[in-house]
Every structure is written in C-alpha cells, then in structure tokens.
Image (cartoon, rainbow, N blue to C red; front, side):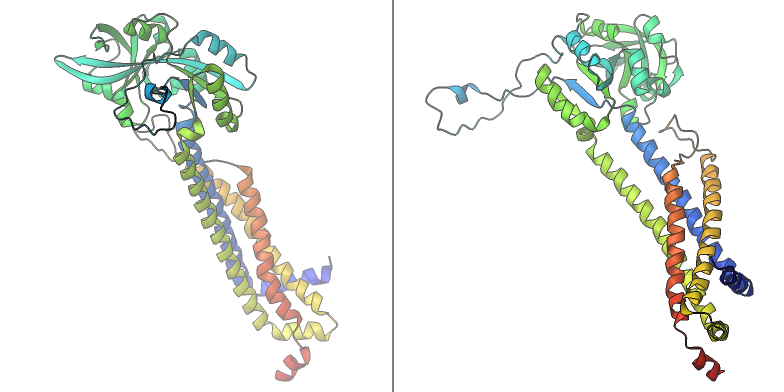
Length: 418
C-alpha cells in the first residue's frame, strides 16, 4: 500500500470531514438496524418454533379410528369389474390403544436414532361443577419423560409437576379449566369418564400452555391414574411420543415405524407444515429489510463521493499533472470508501450488539406465553459476519464507480477551464 496515496486519501477525508462522518453514520445506522432487526426476528422465530417443538413429538404413534378400506361388497365374488358406491360407512371396530405397547417402547428406546420416548394416554372426561358438566381431556403422562423431552415443568405455573408421581389420584388442571371450576391447589375435583363413573382427583398444579382454548379443557395426570379412569390395565397406552436426534429424519421414520409396528404415525413436519412456512416468510422479510437498509447506505456514500470528486476536480487534475496515474486516483477514492465502510461497519456491529442486548432486557409479559419474561433475541454470529461483509462490499462498490470516473479526468481540460 502506497503511503503517499493513503496520506492523500486521509487529507481529502479531513477536508470534507462533515460529509465523511455523515456517510459513516449512515453505514453505522444501517448495520445497527440490520443486526438488531435480524436478531429480534430470529429470536421471535425461535420462540414461536419452540412453542411447537417443545410441546410436539417429532413422531407420534397412535391408532386412528377410520372406516375399513375393504368393504364386504368389494371382496364379494362376481363384483370385481363393477364400481361400488357406499355411503355412511361406519368406522371399523378396533381399540384406540397401541397393541403390545411395552415391546414397541423398548424397541424405540433401543434405536440409536431416538433421543427419548414418552408414552401417553388420552382420556375424554367431564369436569363436574355442581350440576354442570364441562368437557375436558386428561392426558396421562410419564412425568419424568414429559419434563425431559417436552419441558412440561416450564408450563406448570403453580404447584409441582412431580407431585403427579407421589400423590395418588392427582391432577394438574389447565388454567382455563381451573378458573371455570374455581379450583386451587389442594382442592378435590370430580371428573366423569365416558361410561358415567365419577372419580375424585386432587389438584396438585395449574398448567398454562399459552393457548386459551387448550387450557380450558386440557389437564394432566399420571398414566396409572388415567388407566384407572378408563378401567384399563397397566398396558393401556394410546400414544407413543418420540423425540429424535435429527428432526429432519422424522417423515422417513414415521413411515418406517408405521409399517413396522402396524400403527398410524405422523411426523412433526406434516403436523405443523403451515407453521414452518410462516417462519420462513418472516426470516425472508427480515433479510430483505436489512439488506435494503445497507443498499440505501451505499447510495448515500456514492452520492457523497460523487460530490467530493466534483468539488475536487482541480486537486485531481494537479495529482495527474504531477505524475499520478489514473489507477492511483482510483485507489485514493476507493481507500476513502473502504475507510468509511470499515469504520461505520465496525461501529455499527458494536451498536447492533448493544441494541440487541437492550432489546433482550425489555420486560415482556403476557398470559399467552407464561415462560417468556423479556423480548426474545438471537445472538447468531452469522448476522454479524453478513453485516460486516456487506458493509465493506457495499461501500467498495459505492466508491468504485465515482473513483473510475475520477481516474479518467483529463488534467489539461480541467486546468484550461480554471
């Protein structure tokens, strides 16, 4: 690097210090907003994704009640070439429990692709409030597995989820159901199963998922308690929830296990396809807005350097008249542009980090998200790499075109005009 050219670049920047600072501030502001916007939007996406991922199994095994695919008329002799139209087909008579569930769970737990398995039993009930019956669902869970794989304890806003294991015939009510029944921890609520039998259950906790319609009906108990509610044996399991080491393999494994264990299976991508689309669109919008800010800053630098060249025509003519080549003049203005980009970009990265931290400290409390206390942010290093690289590339291009124009100036015409 030619020290004389660097010295000339510094002199030109100092001579137009105000414009240089304006250009640098433009880059700083753009990078700051780029970092803060992407960090906040990525944090928001992570929050929304976790609301689904934390509470949804990667693969769910269950038995779905469906009409039989093979109707008697279809397999009757003499009707092979005919078209049969059948209406009001009734579901086939089969239990919703998973057959031989213990063996299925053991096979899944021994699979190296599986992170963990959580059995579950779903029981439709009525909550009895005096003469009024409220529709509800009690999910029987393995508390340890549910807490480890699905962060169940994070959503228990009152009481202790482990009491489901130690307190016989206990229940964790959804906050909406608890408010309707005016039930508190320690109270006993009456529930009625599908056969009309009533059971008293002691409230040991209050659950809040953040989805109001769910919290009005959903409650949790131990698997053994729900098996008593249904009058079933200890092997009665209606769902097997599977968490995988690699989420992307869920669709493939769902098909594999459905055929292997003769059950229905659904993967998380199929169950939440519309949610993934929303996350992708939000991320795309964030990048589009952030990059637009950087491009606008680049145009600002381009205009400032253009004006600087116009005002410094005589200086450029003198440089070329005293032996400086067009490439030397080109380097002078590129150095100016890069200096603005590096200084403004570095300051913007620091301000962006500070702005992101400030956002993460702003209190954010809502009944729909009980586990969130402040606004979510994501300190992903890739945002800072993109911001830094883009600031240099943008300012280089903003300086290249004016510098190319300056390098072609004919000093004789400038001096003659003066």
